[in-house]
Image 1 (cartoon, rainbow, N blue to C red):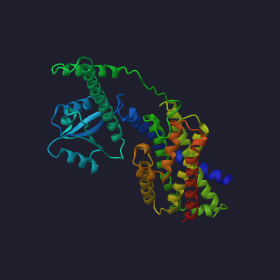
Image 2: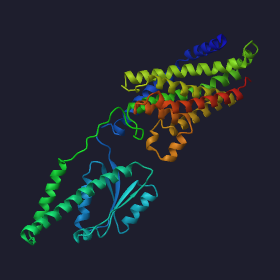
Image 3: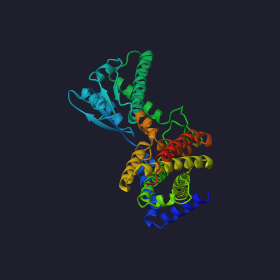
Image 4: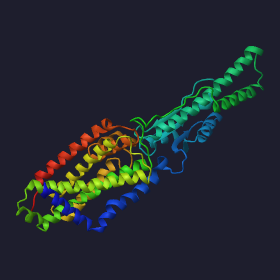
Length: 408
């Protein structure tokens, strides 16, 4: 054990002598945490205003009801209209969604106004891309507007029917006035409805909710990213020691192969734990990140994640034959795992296929655990599945590193 600790301490002293290491370990993650946190706060806008979503619209109707519907949609806070015009506008809007160029499209049929004026039902067509969140928001906004117009139409019809029941046939000149009054009444009543639903979020959001954004996402994401990036780049140390025959000389002393492997895993683990907990502490004190109600759960996640990174680092250092090869492999693996694992954007907002790929690598599970702790208030039991999977990755990488480890 003393030999292991000695090798760990020696490697830490070598790392400490490299001043640039502190920049990459501590300063650079904080810069990226701040930049990303500012970019994605308030769901990505930073202005405090609700996000707006684009809706492609093909209005084939030339009557006043189609125009009124478009005007009502345009006034909605959530929607920006992208109008498609021309005789083939409906087919073009459908093709845009089907080809993936647009996420949602609304088609107003040519007989929309005629059907409504005849007292018959008219149907709108809403095309959507099921892999995106945009169609859900825009469809709900459209449905809300359609419901409002339906209520106005029913109220107007009810007023005319009541007038006819009390005083006989409605004079033709009075019908527009009566329906306009009914419409104004509905509009005023909708501003202060008699029945409302008050939503109170107790604790943190449920599992299916999108996680909190801003620093609540960027702080854990950048901590995991730079622990991974710096941890994998440490694989170069092992290649350098092999090239300079430092490992060969160690094997001429009474030091076991297992001791050298454990020491290499150990010093990487120590550096990773110092780095991630420094970033967690800075995030809590400066960026005001609430890391959840379970320090033990957070410890379990960080320990297993850093252990997985340490095992992968030794594995890369064992299989790489040159320093350049180790650097290239580490950089490609780290950036790929960050992108696929939800460190640059939450996996919860990506398609299902993307999420499945993200959960084939450690970063996806680690970020899930962080969101569960920060956004959903989970305890140790709640993040135990993720921690166990990360422990499995750590074990697999370590076994592979042991099997491939060589000193020359």
